[in-house]
Length: 287
View 1 (cartoon, rainbow, N blue to C red):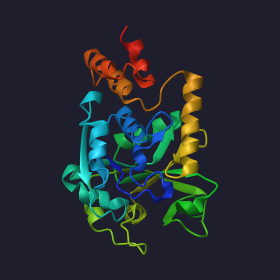
View 2: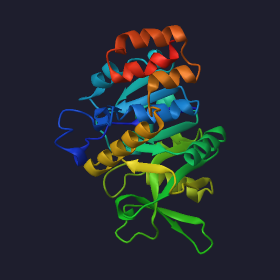
View 3: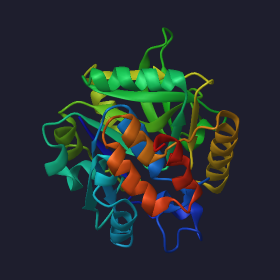
View 4: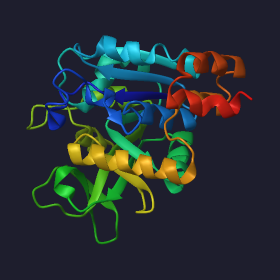
């Protein structure tokens, strides 16, 4: 399985902060936002990851993350010259994802929680059909939303409905089997003029191959692509780090603890970072 992270949008919800910089490169507390979805994938065992970005930010992502070797992973970058919706990412990176199961993440989504980690690993270890992850929210009209029948079965996913049929928002995390490239190619343009993830998910649903994983409130999910969401996610990370004295989304640490880089590589990384709080955190592994 490979990972694919969508970062090609115009980030208008965070303007003017994103006038010259992709939102996924903005700080979410003490790290660039993009570190969190990458770390989520790596902890789950996905080490080949593609990043979809636009012309303005393509080189910036490469400069920030390199080829991933510092963390023991492989990062590839794909240029979407004319972004037309999230599912178009599969057409842009078709050679990378063809005939493979894929974990697809919207780069501004932040996840945390033990139950989430367990459910996520179950999905990627059994990638048949499509998995979507739902989370109860107070403002479902801002998201894709699940509609249920009287028995609790999903009958439809609706993108940003004015009258939401439930409060179960569909998060920006999806696990697809190897059919996803073909499905993306056959996805029609929506009324908004985009290739929507919701439409592909409904295609899987019609085939009886969509599974909705309902995340419980004790987990944590936020769309960090708004000022409020970015602030709340940053506040959450800050409080948890202070409480546990453990980092979240620290790619160097995760690479080492997952056995992807040696202590020698970790030491090399540390030498470049030792004057920073991010680097000093690694000292405990080098004694």
